Each structure stands twice: as C-alpha cells, then as structure tokens.
Amino acid sequence: MIGNGKIKVVIIDDSIDTVKHIKTLLEFNEKTIQVVGAAYGGKDGVKLCQKLKPDIVLMDVNMPDMDGLTATNHITSTLPDIGVIIMSVQSENEYLKKAMFAGAREYLIKPFSSDELVSAITKTYEVQNKRKHNIRLVDQVIQTKVITVFSTKGGVGKTTISTNLAVALARNTKKRVCLLDLDLQFGDVAVMMNLLVKNTIYDLVKDINNLDSDLVNDYLTIHFSGVNVLPAPIKPEYAEFIDSKHVERILNLLNGNFHYVIIDVPAAFQDIVFAALDNSEKILVVSTLDLPAIKNVKVGLNIMENLKYKEKINIVVNKANEQYGVNHSEFEETVGYPIWESIPEDSNTVVTSANKGIPFVMSRVDTKVARSVFRIANKLYNNDDSPVVEKRALWKVFQF
Ligand SMILES: Nc1ncnc2c1ncn2[C@@H]1O[C@H](COP(=O)(O)OP(=O)(O)OP(=O)(O)O)[C@@H](O)[C@H]1O
Ligand SMILES: [Mg+2]
Image (cartoon, rainbow, N blue to C red; front, side, top):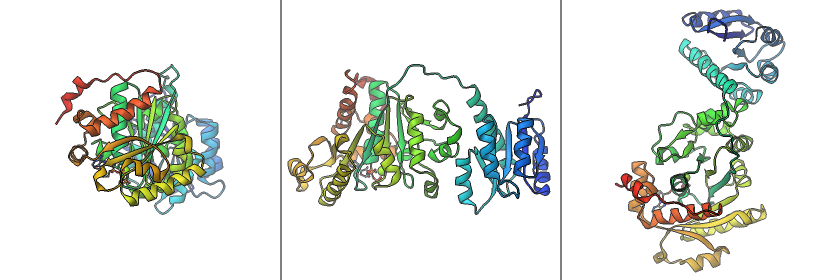
C-alpha cells in the first residue's frame, strides 16, 4: 500500500488492449486501487516489480518472452510480499493448477467483470497483508494427534463417527480440534454439522503456497461446538485440484495448531487417503456386521498390513446389531482383529441428528450411541494421561 492508502497494482500482459481494459475496469475504484505500472512481457514485468514493489500483480499466462507462470515463480520466490493474480482463459485448467504451484494467490478467468477483478485484488491484498502482520497467538507447543476414520466399505458411518467424535473431543476435553473432510467429491461433513461454509479445502489449496499455521485458521469454519472444520469442495470437479502433497502440507500447517485433527475420508485407497493414513497416529477402521462390509474390510485390512499400518489400526463396529446373524466374536475371528469399540444401531438418534445438523453427542448425550462415541473420545484422550471432564449438565441445553 502506498502513502495514500491505495493498493498498488502492476499489470503484466502482452496485449495493450487488455492492459487498457483492466485500467478502465479499475477506474471506478481509484480511491482504493491504483495501477502503478504495466509491462508487456514476463521479463520486463519481473524487473518492474523489483523496482515498484507493488502489492498486487495481475499476470497474463501466455506471453512471448517469459510466460506468466515462470514470471510468477520469480516474483513469489524473490518478492514474497507481492500477491500474484493469474489471468487465464476458461479452458486452461492445467494452467490454473500450475499457477498454484508457481505461487499465485488467485486466478481470474477471462473475461472478468470489474466486480470480480476488484474482489480478487482486495481479497488477495487482505490475505497478503495479514500474512505480513500476523503475530503468532499460540506460543506454547501443541502435540497434534491425527486420527483418520477409514473404511474400505462406503456407508458404514465414517462421517457420522468423525463428526461426533470431533465434537465429543472438543466439548469434553476443551482441546483444540480440527475436522478435515477429505471426501473431496462427496464430502458431507458440512451438511451433517449444518455449517455455513465460506471457504473449503479448495480455497485453502489455491492459496497454499502463501499460508502459514496462523493464516490457515482463516480457512476453517468454526462449528458452535468449537470444532474447526475444513470442509470438502463445494463442487466434485474441484477434487482434481487437490493431491496428496496438498494434504501433507495442510497437515503440516495444522500441526502444532490443534490437539486433535480428525480426518474423514472416502471408502477408497487413493493417494490423498494414503497421505492421511501415513500421517495418522491412529486409524479407526469402521465396519458394520454384514457380510459385504466384513469381506471388504478384511481385504482392506490385509492391504493396510502390507503397507505397515497394522500398529495404528483400531476396529470400530458401527450399527452393531447382532440379531442379523454375525456376532462380535465371529466378526473378530473373521477379520483377525479385536473390536476396539462398538457403536449400536440407532437410526432414530443418528438420522434425526444428521437431518437437524446437530451432532448427537450434543443433542442426545444419554443415548447408547452417543455414549459409545464418548468412550472412543475418552480412550483417545486418556492416552494423554488425564481423565476426561464431562460437562453433561451443560449439554442438556442442546437436547431435542
Ligand atoms: N449407529 C448408527 N445407527 C443407525 N444409522 C447409522 C449409524 N451410523 C450411521 N448411520 C447412518 O448410515 C448412513 C451412512 O452413514 P455415514 O454417511 O456416516 O457413512 P459414511 O461411511 O461416511 O458413508 P460414505 O462412504 O458415503 O461417506 C447414514 O444415513 C447414517 O445416518
Ligand atoms: Mg462419509
């Protein structure tokens, strides 16, 4: 920002017409944004940035001498205070992905409106500014425990368990808990928790090169239980922008910031799931007591053993109802693992809670299903050597 309080912008685009057009779009906002210079090629653009040190650079992708991504890389690695916004045409999905890796903060699809342009500049500037001035709030070192709720069978209750477990931990232990929805295509954590989502993992990944463990908090949505949630993308197609490296980076950013990171994953062995499993201290493998689930889970467990996850595995049986034929000991014999915890079937409680968007560990604390989730929270917490303090009386407020 210059002395006059305006955001300094440099435009780098080989089309004179585009530069003119952008200047015109920004004229309406001359009180807050000022175009301080323009360059018509990547090389000149980098030099201009070194000289003018703008707040924001609007960068074209295809330019003859040095392309926009290389120029972005130069700028973000040597002048980290500058926020680069890539301007690209619609079909260039691959470019968008590369732009993120080059260090761009935002991208605009051409043609864009004045509102979109101003909003991208303002948002990028704010994030950039916070990054510069943010002072670490938490000085103490927090040991982070990462727990993934996994299954090789869909629909067994992973999301139900991860959301309720996160809430049980946050409410009972007063520790900082983050819930990460890595079911990137069809994640429903936000729905189950009735969250008003502003940012998702997709937004975080777009900005990932410029984030630190303080700024990452801005991308989390706080549930009224105190759990910090990083929801799955709003559209399934955004999943392709997120890979295992991003997941590792996100877990690094959360490390030291939260006592517990609970991860909900899809029922599949995908790279992002492996990233979660690799970085987890415990893996809760969920199964139901029906044969298709047991068969799948057994196969999954064999694969996980080969991948050296055995020590981390704890089996959770959900919707446990022995009257349908398979009992607990038969299950244990078949899969070769002891049942660590068993959660009863209770459609009334579970489905009503999901539909109301209030986790049952808040609204129906005295049900068996809630108690079994508290037991899981207790077991996880008790590894920390201190008892869980239950605040049941308070929770009654949320009964329905
Ligand atoms: N203990 C339970 N008793 C009764 N119903 C349950 C129980 N746990 C989960 N359900 C129901 O089972 C369905 C699937 O649950 P959930 O979405 O949590 O599973 P999931 O493993 O996350 O599924 P997906 O693989 O699709 O992500 C939901 O309708 C949920 O309400
Ligand atoms: Mg799910």
